Amino acid sequence: MFPRVIQINDGQSNHLNLFNSRPQPKKKRKSRTAFTNHQIFELEKRFLYQKYLSPADRDEIASSLGLSNAQVITWFQNRRAKLKRDMEELKKDVESAKVLSAHKSFLENVTDLGILKKKAMSIGASEEAATNLVVNASK
Image (cartoon, rainbow, N blue to C red; front, side):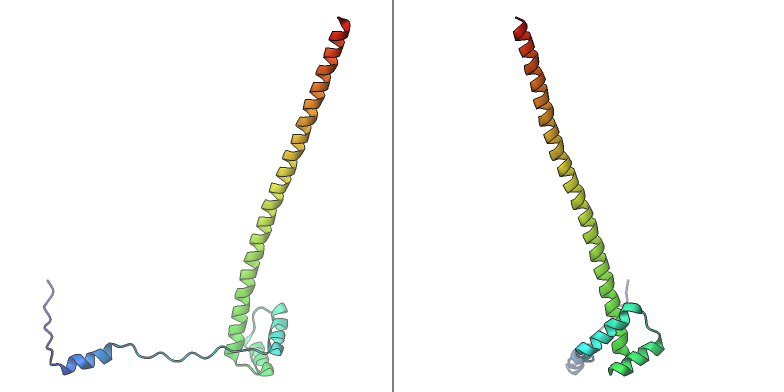
């Protein structure tokens, strides 16, 4: 079906192919930026009332804090992602609290019903005893 390809191995070309097939080394990643407490405080303060920055705002913050635009962009992206995660976790916590509250309420009602049943049984027993007394007294 497919045409047959014949490889000629002269020793040298095979040796060169080994080097050509190796992946090229990747660029070194920039090391993680360690923000100062002051930088984090200012970024968090801005994030409280502004989740997205305009290019002008980004330039202003970057220059005032001694950061690059890319660092400010990345910080805000990461902070929005963290906010989203925290909100989802809070939502799950609220739902769990509602379920626990419903279970607690149910168990309290079951306990109350148990007390009512005991009272009803004791009232029934008292009525029966009173009836027996009346019957026995009349004999």
